Image (cartoon, rainbow, N blue to C red):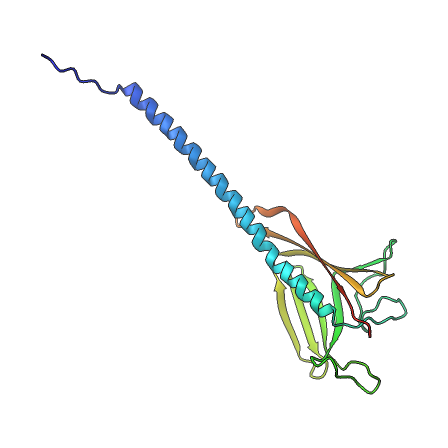
Length: 200
């Protein structure tokens, strides 16, 4: 008696290999898309950390500056916000702010009961490196220090209404460019903080 052995034909083997390849390519494509999406979510979250922390630090320091009222009613300190004047809505906008802060001991005052100043502070965006810079100058020694507060910042703006000159709004936009040229996110993320200067 002859034992008949059955096997797969070449057509069946080719068909099963083709179907397996299609399934593997599909799974690989889904994993690649998921990985790209995860990379974008992670990039977006990490992108917000630096500028958000910088906004907090700037707002905290601006709160130490006294509100001074000058001829244009908008000066925070002698240097004030550098700008070209308010727009039609009464809003002043600038890409840089300069102000003075008192000494660490808040109770140190001069003979006229004015705070004794320790530093001139300036915040601005370096357009070339996309970094928020904090530049401080010691009033007594004139020693200047520069620190980077945040990276990957595309825009920085300080604004205030002429009817409330002590309330400063800080707006920063951030966006990351990946090595392959993609930008995360497609449009820059905009973050805002407010700080109210103290009364003299």
